[in-house]
Image (tube, rainbow, N blue to C red):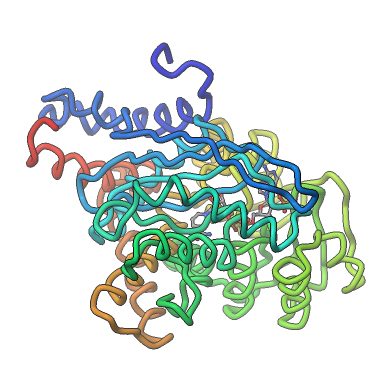
Length: 434
Ligand code: NDP
């Protein structure tokens, strides 16, 4: 805490991982040698920079840009860029730390990183978004590259923003190699990348349910958020026969007892992806009920899939979910459950998957995009989807391997943390003190 003052999210993420790793490390003391843990909690490089740009009124705006290059031990730094007014060093360091373990879990050759800016895309014109993206990469471009650091999207950064950033990086470097993943299909993107995080989370939850002899068919599901992850989570859960009864954003929650349909999902995608609107607009267009200021967790469900942001599900929410009979919580977002909430869920035998395991499908498919770009190939939709499913099943297996307890229960938290840690730590030990 003394080394990282004012960084509560970063300390939360490190504490959570270290608490679950410690019993394993005590039995395997080689992992305390060579100051391995001290090195692991210090990002290899932190880049902070000014982004100045001109808005539609001719005014100069100044934002702060970041790239956290956490670990190169297994492969190039890899992780998304987030544009949100809340972005700061603490949030990005937590995300880069988590990303390092998550990427290791995929078994693909990717290190860990994260970046972004305290820019608020809400209410900005297309021209402003483009000028901001271009201004940001006039600094970022010198720190990235296909074998160094490959950013992608995250909150506030979708295909449009990735396109603007990748375009300017190519212009500045005069090179066409894979500088971003999550690119459009017209310039090297991979099929299934937009769907991958949401689909992957549902695939992971499906594996968890399967162990208990259950499937999504007929289950009630709540989803938070309404962005990229939430949309494809809804699509896949519906396809597997679940009834999805909520969707939300930072202004409130839509509760829909009839459940989502493909037609309603198309309206949501239009509202969020084309009109850059709110879920209240979606509720108006579909005649569903919008509850201002509410989160989805008061609605009784079998499965909850938090897909918005960090710390959106607290201890009280977890108690409400448990009281209402939830059997599975799988995180599409990064660290959406507080530490207290996780203790409640695990303590009541709820199947609980931490984001670093269950939302790894996005970055895994980014890894597949890097492979396709390097080989100058593009795989079919089915091929990428099949690999995604296989990777999620592999991560589930790793969690069982490292997280199974003597009483037959499984801690997916311990499993994910230990499995990711062992891969990163072994790679670090093999490469000496650097
Ligand atoms: P989007 O920007 O597409 O959507 C984010 C959604 O979450 C929006 O509905 C937004 O509502 C809501 N949200 C964001 N910040 C807040 C906040 N501070 N308070 C309340 N609601 C908020 O992002 P993604 O769907 O890509 O990302 C969602 C989560 O999934 C994040 O935690 C991200 O790190 C994680 N993730 C994403 C991956 C990807 O491939 N995209 C991969 C792995 C994890 P509003 O519009 O009101 O802000």
